[in-house]
Image (cartoon, rainbow, N blue to C red; front, top):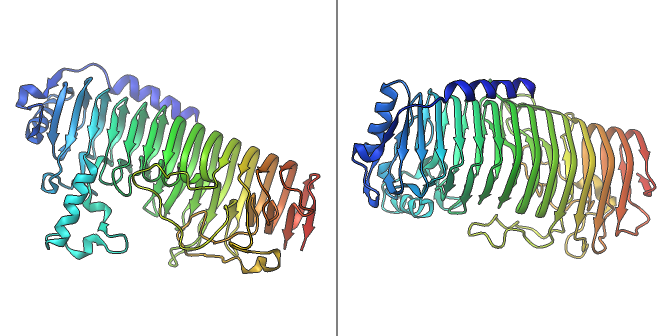
Length: 498
């Protein structure tokens, strides 16, 4: 990460030196929450860009706007009590490159959004207005998601979308109520997000931060509270990938997964460090590492995660959805110093937009690491992991006995999710199609009995296990090994080989 830090020090000290202020009031903006200010704000941005650099100031007040385009050398600065409020009229938004947004940029450099003001997308009202367009015949059926009864994502504006940009800063601002993803940075380089506050439980697909095929990204001190994935890395192009990503000291609440790689993973992810993350009230996984579209996911360190009231602790998945190219590669993953409390009831009951209920009965899901036949997850290290489960696994509710280990579905081409296999035969960890696994100082506990063993390994090779402690489970079988080779298990937990 040393090169990444040096890059940020350089671009911070050279790209954002003091520049002239351009107050949007001087260009005709009106802070009444009713007047459309798109033209006034854009005029101030254009003037600053024409002069080579400048700071466009949003003063105190509510400034209604449609899409605005940020340009090279321009800082958009929101002062205290300033609100940049997105219009609820879909016609006030345009598409610059990919999707619609309140603030957009394409191919620009040295751009920033700063200040302690707020960007409010009025997402639910906007999304419902877009939804109504379909029912009056103004939105084509190809742009409507019939399965979920809502307009597709590209129809619903985000708050920020930067594509093909370099040297980006977003600092201190509050982002709220997006109609879709909150903010996306795609094919960008040198991205710094610091102390950004995101509250977006307004509508579906409210991802907090989406980093797509970017290089040299630093996300620090952010507070994310969203109705979808918290911080999500994606790769949409087979010839691009996310590289040199650093995430630290963030707090995340999510009705999906808190930290997620994928689902889209065509090129892949390399050299990612995530540390000192606090997670709470998260419906799906605290950490989800997924590579399912033929890309390469490698060299990932997750260090120091504390998660309370989450549906799942760790989910690592190599799949193959593409069917037009070879399955991808998922290797060299280290997860350490993790403490997770898994919930018995759904963790996101207080959300406005909650995660979807599963269509089948199930007991609490274990953490899982799974590849597919012929394509193993490689070289995973789990160290200093503590996961507390509620227990109460009941084989009258759902049953996957050890006699049917070969019946756990592979789901090779399915959407990756910790619940994708249905009922699993372990309450703590389920590991399948893995080569090279180190588990050191692992503590698993349950509050009440569970009919399943604590760990099940299926078709796993080269396993080293040191210091495994199980609390609350008195069964004579703790670890089940099925079709496994080259194991070095140093533990007092009873082992069953099948």
